[in-house]
Structure formats: C-alpha cells, structure tokens
Length: 182
Image (cartoon, rainbow, N blue to C red):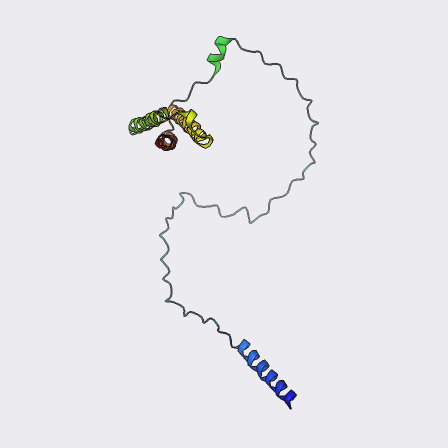
C-alpha cells in the first residue's frame, strides 16, 4: 500500500506540474488605434507641349536588325620609350610652379583670427613659465604636444583654416595651463 501511495503522489505531482506548464500567461493584443488620416496628394504641374506627338510610335513597328560583323581588335602597340626629363635651371623652376591659390576671407575672419592668435600667445606664455627639465616623462610629452599644437595652429592660420586653428589653440592652451599649474 505504501508503494501505491507513492505512485499516486507521483501521478498527482505530474498532472499538477503538467497543467501548470500549460497555464502560461500570454500577451494580449493591443487594440488598434484610430485610423490614420491620409494626406491629400500634392498638386501637380502639367506643362503642355507645343507640338503634338506623332501618331505612330517606335513601339508599333519593330526596327529591322542589321547583321553585326565580328570586330577584330588590333594588336597592342609596343610601349614607347619616354625621354628623360631635363632638370630646369633654378630661375625657371620658380616660374613653372603654379601660383598659390588665393583665399578670400569673410568679414568675421579678422576677429576670429585675432582671437586665435591671442589664444596661441596665451598658450605660448604659459609654456614659457614651465621648466621642461623639471617635468616627469609624461609631463614632458604633454609639453611637447602643446608645442606641436601651437605650431600646427599657426600653420592652420596661415592656410586660413581658422576653425581648425581655434581647436588646436584651445588644446594647446589647455595643456599649457595644466602644466603651468603643477
């Protein structure tokens, strides 16, 4: 009998476990919202042609196909020997270079250039107050990086790339201020 009760308990547990597995919660569908309003089509501009189209079209009658003769490709030409370029005299070398492109600034460029140059001067003054020999290896790398930023910013100002120059000047000033404060 004892064994029968164990079997009965196992069956009850199996049935309850099986029915619990089937009793999962299911996602319910969200009711659809209000119907969408379709906008009206935009007005179309139709232009009438001055001349009417011909009554017959190219699609009505197929064009007769002309026989195509196979084409022969000519053999490739042998490579030509290029003459050696002669070095130009020093006077002609400067004249043969294309002229530098002229850039025209906008009215606000003068003020922007002045602000960039002031920022570069402030960064240079801050670096001048720092003794590079007393800095650690990482600080010396920052010092060198600030000097490179200043040089690149000056070059960008010469090329009239003032946005890039302002970015470089800000980076140089930030590094220089950090180094001067240590």
